Length: 408
Image (cartoon, rainbow, N blue to C red; front, side, top):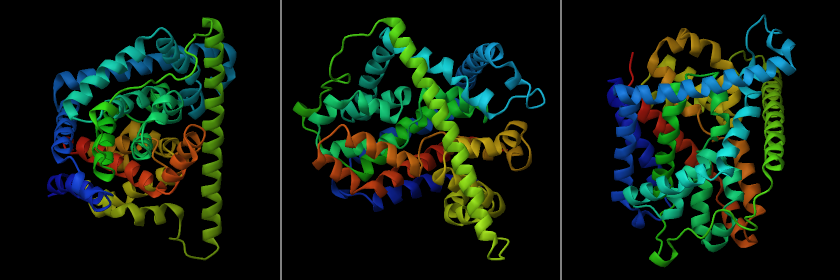
């Protein structure tokens, strides 16, 4: 019965996207079905096929290795930080400080031209297979390496040439990305193999949902990649570039730390205020659980489990993925309580592995405001709820696709 619900959930989530589509007549259903089929095949491959399991586990082990190497730098500079938590890792040392190595590493791969080359050719292949416009397919991959605001910044030339409607498609897709620079942080808090499974599923899910919510016909003469660098392409000296990259990584750590502290504190304050009503059940988590419960239940859980999953989902949308990952990390890694169930582990991990939350909305709108004309920015700002809906639906479709093949 739960398996049937899980299957139906994918159709229901796509149906919700259709219900809110701004141009139902022009949805390219052949492309949507093709991409959905690819997503389900990949979900099966990564979770059930031995070679797929080895691939995602190998990638996860690779990121864990990077984190362990980064710990050597932390041990040299801040040895007391590694022993302050009774000798064990904590959120800052295990999830955030490794960013100081991972971000510069990926930036170096970009500097030498390897990542742009890889993204370009995989993007062309994805466009050919899915039937999507070239830049949209290219963008879906590029944002997974650079992050949502960074990829928009280096795509300014393309954004200027594209219609407001196509810019809106990119804005919706940006809600579903993660950046490879912080994947290592995720793998320290939730199962790495599921994090790595979520990334390609989110790429395809973003294409599916944006194609339904905002169908856009692109003339052949407009289906070109104008440029993704923009401005002066002259490279900075390597060590100057590396210094800027390390500085950027440090700023990212401070931003994440400040955001997590602020959101957790605000949530605690709201709970304290709600407790003044005398209603013990009236908490922020319970309110989130009520809103997200129907969606969690459709993912193949009984009512009790669905409510717990729904609380985590709702909290993630209002705060961010780091807040929830930090909350569930001990139990999900130890496979205790709710997370003794592997279906719960993969569904929640895949759902959490994206930037889809209220804070990201502000980041994306802010990025577009500095990159495109006022007319295009007004067009996007008037459709902010669509962007949040797109992010939520992509996370739900990806979680449903992955969970469909994992039960215990």
